[in-house]
Length: 173
Length: 123
Image (cartoon, rainbow over all chains, first blue to last red; front, side, top):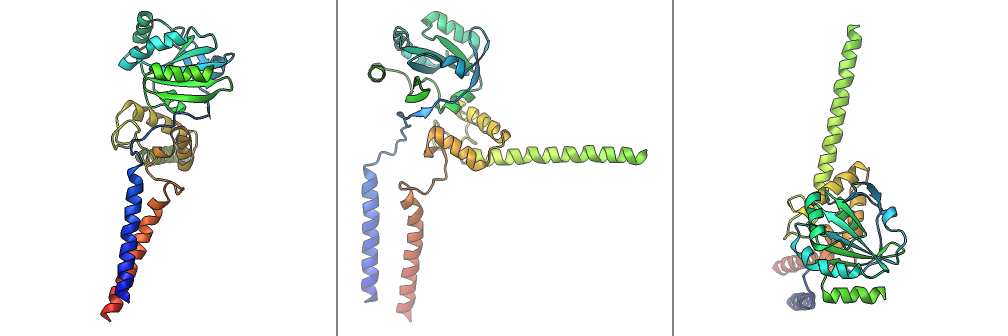
């Protein structure tokens, strides 16, 4: 009788382990950051890349329907690849582009803008990377789509590409 | 006069000691939090161990938050809001993690039952 209980318990345990492992086979173990969320934008203070004037987030996010906050740096190679897409967004009047220059040398950043063009209406600096961390960013490049209620409606980790630009255009239509 | 001088020196020494103690507590708390925060762009490293840009900035933010007077749990909650549950090494008990928490207890009980059965068979 006891042996039967032991046997049935062992079978139950093995079956349980099998179910757990079998179920986990379908789950991807690659971490994917939350890309669509309605998180409110944090308030922050920074300074303008070109004028060095102090500027707060309240002064930047004022009158536009949508904002694209792009984290970039002159030393970041994928930022060069996504730059033409940002230049395209600059033509859309309902979007205001804000650049957040991440841990960069201001002179190199200005050189980058002079060489590739300036899609940003405002370019602010994040010398020690703390603004990016408070925004929930991972690194460069990273793009946030923000609505007029100052809520982050889409977060793109990595460089922009054709598909992502299409997705953004669909949201802002 | 000498007594006044003595008390003055004693007060200065004590205030330095308490300042040092505050600074030490700050560092202990900071290191404890950093060891429990995952570096999201590194392979299996905590923010404490990593020298990546992400980790360096995270260390500054956590330092700021401790200075602002936030407790350890408040800092974890703040980071979870920005980066999700994955940011901490210590998982919460929720519908996604209940097996993780319950399985060791279940195994412990299961082992106990086996031992009890074995013992009773031997008797």
